[in-house]
Image 1 (cartoon, helix red, strand yellow):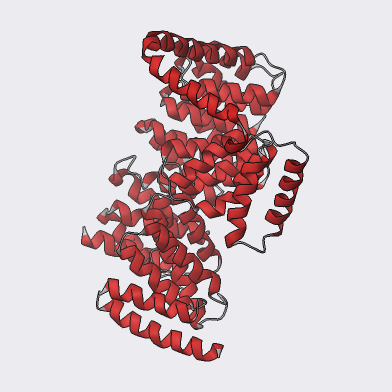
Image 2: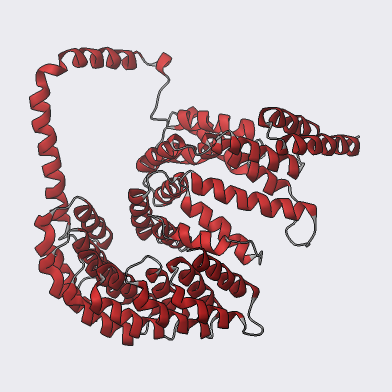
Length: 522
């Protein structure tokens, strides 16, 4: 019986594909839904349903359909297998849709997964590079890395920075909520989850997370309501079942802080009081304004006091908040923290970042000195801040660090800082030192910065062409992509010579051909 239904579903899906190719999307959607009604585990029906929904700009539903297609496809391992091909296409299309709605971090992770599986998809490398250049993407990926190592404090800072640059990324918003939940900041986690739902994240999928937060906040009735709704669509979720039993037991013991509105007349009285206050509130507008100003003043005052705390975590958060609030009164204290060898390295690193956010020119000397700190994280953060301030005085010291620092992550941060500063001296160091670094990741960082047109292409194209002979294939590939985007005809001859190299990997050859085509089209 099931085989008949599957055969019927495939026949209907084939008809739907023809209708889709004729661009009759409304009818095609109905046909694919009919195919799914016969067999809801037919990958091709879900995939084409996602394509139709994309045409209608119903992106959230399209992502759900593509996800279903990847879930029901059986394999990614057997070349030529139909399910495998559909799964790869669904992954790729899902990444395109995510990037279209601003979820760049999740799109990068999807494309990276495809790359790790060894799929040679044309244009994937270029698209990943373009996505990484989007605002907030690197911070989001950095936050994900910190989250995987349970470094919640740094993860929160990275996710918030990412959302500040790209507020539309619901995936980063969801990860920030999960991080806050794991760090036991349940009230703020609830707010972030609601924000993620407003951005289009699946509400049902977040009900379990919200229930955990509510349960820890002793709001057991609301937690049980969330779990009941969650279990309607996920009846076999053991964690949700167990948590629901715990909530029911807590309610029976009378431990729930919340109450049902029909059980508490006090709630009704509070509502009436709220309406009365609303009616007379306009008379106190000026008074409320004064209270608000005083409140914000006291926040800064409390944050300044926290800079003397012995708790490193408290001090870290206070420094970060002062930097975000642009409180210039904290500059001298932050310089003192950065210069102090008694402070923990993480605290001093955060102070260096905050000084960059404040663009504190008076901290230049301390930040330049911090480039030689024993802790690599402090050196990274100092380089970032000097790049933010575009300090010409820091160019030569950073050039020295680029030559001799043993940690490649520090050197990458220096490369990014020099690229932000630009100027002849900074560009000269990137060309003469950065491109000759022994680490391929540092070389690629320099190449990617030149892709952003930080210098005249006539100046950088020939040094870049030398990297077409580099031992590392990924460096050669990134260099070819960059030369193609610079579109300088001086690169044509070196690119054509590089194309003649025997045993060159296919990915590199494709990048070189793409670069030659781009230059010829210019």
